[in-house]
Length: 90
Image (cartoon, one colour):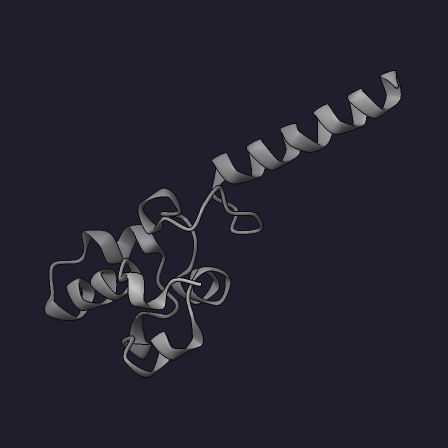
């Protein structure tokens, strides 16, 4: 039982550290503002429906969510709005 608890604790610690670092491998949740270090294409594939790709600006697929959130142009604002739109949630 002690071994099981230790393994469980270590695995939960790994998940927490991975989420905190924003490595993109694991997501704390599917809220865009909580995943600012994740690339948009990874976030979309994990947390959004495929139909978002027909309206999402292709030039921003390689940008991190933090960059998109801070962007001032209309394209960045549209992308951020789409990432938070409930129509595309999985």
